[in-house]
Structures are given as structure tokens and as C-alpha cells.
Image (tube, rainbow, N blue to C red):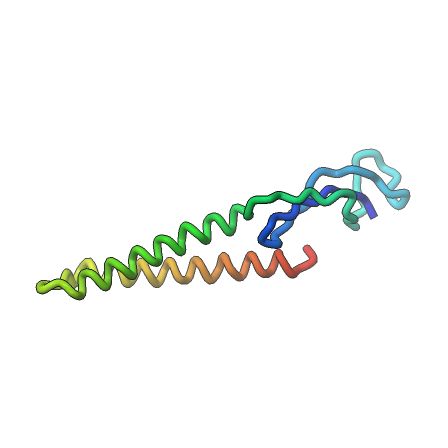
Length: 111
């Protein structure tokens, strides 16, 4: 039951901050008992780093989709470029899915 600060972003993501107070279950100086209570919540008006990275991936996904569409509409389609863009698009979509899962796990989880 030691006390820590908590940072809370607008998107709902949070993290533990600095140690602020020791409970009477732990007698050793500098040690914590393992149970964390919130001493103070620091609201950050920005979005978290994970959301910023996810937004970058979304912009890259949109660009790849536009490139694929533009290249398929050309008279002589660039088949190698289209194939590479589709592979990259798949990887970007997988990364976005992983980031979304990490964000939701932290946002709704207890750890």
C-alpha cells in the first residue's frame, strides 16, 4: 500500500509516476511493499506516445492505399511497386492492430 503519482493522458492511457509515500507494511527504507495506491493523478492534456505512433502508422497506411490505387489506375501498372506496397500495407495494419491491443490492455487493465 505504497503511494505513487499517476500520469493520465486524454486518451485514457496511464502510467505510474514517482514514489511518494511508504506504508507501514514495509519497514525497510527505500523499499515498497508491492501494492500501489494513487497519491496524485497528473492529467496530461496531450495524447500518449503510443497514440502518436499509431497516428503516424495510420497516415502511412492511407498513403500506401492511395499509392496502390493511383498505380493501378495508370495505363502501365507498376506491378512490383504495387506488390511491395501491399506487403508494406499488411505490415502497417498488423502494427496498428498490435498498438491498439497494447493501448486497450493498459487503458482497461490494472497493471
